[in-house]
Image (cartoon, rainbow, N blue to C red; front, side, top):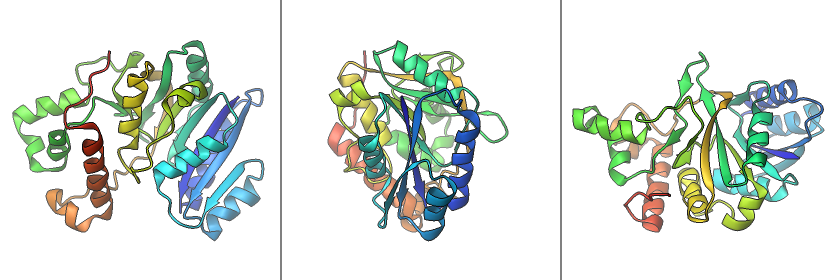
Length: 268
């Protein structure tokens, strides 16, 4: 059975759309459960989860516990032998979940698996990457990213040297849509809750690689993602002062490099 863990934050319309899309694309014969982790719940999201979709497992939290703790609560409540973690801004295409599940069951060496994400216009969205260095973050958030030699560094970070139409082992996958096997979690453990909102989806894959599991990009499964990059504004370095999401991203990045060092991990 597949457990689908949906993490919601104060967005009843998006939660409704997400749950309707799951109802529409998942076959009745496909064994699954849906768990909604409602971070900083309010009356609107509670109504959607309990009145409109009464067949789901609902985990509400009054205080904003953050993305990482929300995911972990959902994983710990899950009963499936594989779990699919998704944000409410993910809209799966038909058979996309089934394809991921079949692959991870047939390939026990794979601990984490991610689909090809699509922009709302159908174009490909970047969802797999090489590991960060501190300079990578600086380059992506400032004017320095426009320098010619820096563009080469960022292209490598974005796996421009790889064929992303093929199934591919990668360093890490965007946390908006991830499938994980229960067996792998039993070995690797849950996400590190020292990361509040960001970088847990970068840190976690390191531990999968370190424990002998692969992290795999699987473009045969496709899903739409309404991605807004709320931590990145128009003020570049000044975002650190004015954008709370940027501030949290920087805090979590500092925690990541303090824990793992500044040199990127190289997996087998």
